[in-house]
Image 1 (cartoon, each protein chain N blue to C red):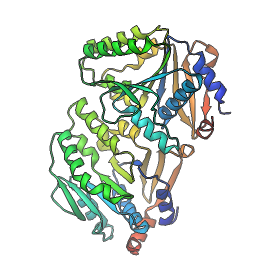
Image 2 (image 1 turned 45 degrees about the vertical axis):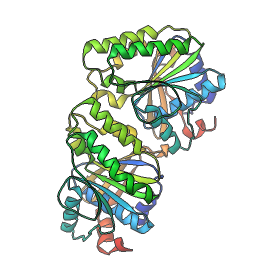
Image 3 (image 1 turned 180 degrees about the horizontal axis):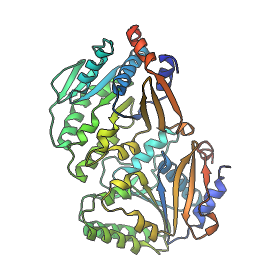
Image 4 (image 1 turned 30 degrees about the horizontal axis):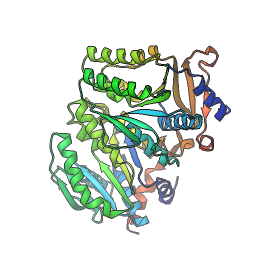
Length: 230
Length: 224
């Protein structure tokens, strides 16, 4: 793959309503995936909403800077949960609760006013696995899971970025249930010069198991040439 | 590998005797949705009513997943015993709280099952049983459930398909699979191989099919 447009055409193939689980290993993958999706939203004229749990977007913002990429997410709607550094256009703030159920209810309240009006949109969820760190019982675990499942469908295309190592280390590892719920699951494996995307689950069943490689160069040059501001 | 035909699939469903349990262990993407679709379609075409045990919105997930695959299916003609959950799909005839005491749960489940089966032959699909087992806190509760499943075995008005998600099992305190594999008359695995779903029998009354791969291509299944 040698252009962003090729990547965008693959994102075009994601159907409205889909939940795409993006599993990654420690790397700059969340930075580049978030950036690509934001660029995609701009290019296709779709609003982008980021669920920013625990200042995840702040970290992404700072790391992109280290790559020489100035991206302020000014035109991105942000629903911020906990954390202290605001990035992007923060439209709702959710007070954190160590009780996941209370927390999700607050999230649903906050989202209810914003999301339905957006219609077709791109939703990026960052740091979801960290909410599962607060789960202390099977009951809480499945209350969260059934609520995440309820979001499947509708008009938005949602991308849940989950750090595999973090998720696996938890008492209640959300990955198996998340993989079951998601309509598309990709694993991105970092190499020194690229990201290798493996399609573990897709409604285009015949593509299951196929791979795709994106050179880091393609993304960083697209971003630094202000390809993101088209 | 030639994909199995509709006739082969239906013959397999036909040959599973009433009174028995077919355990389907799914480790594939979309396997549960496709299997549920095929069984319900078979039941409709052969005129056998279906009731589904839906644990924690597993049926809603099947319905949503089918939609992404291009299949519209609302299960409106299927009776549903709903355990927990918040998304309603199908004709819900009973609701059971997922957290209730196993004894209470089983007693109520037994009553409603008897009521359904007193009306004649049914196909029963159980979705998300592993989620119910995840809630069990000790070995006594675990064996209460296992014993109840054995009790249902042999009812001549019931042909049951337990579709379990295998990838969830390692996170469950009391793994139900070994017991279920013993109770079931037929055990199959659903996998994906080179972009095609395959059903592999592991335990069967007809030994010649054990270990063989029966491929099911979605595009063809949709035309059945």
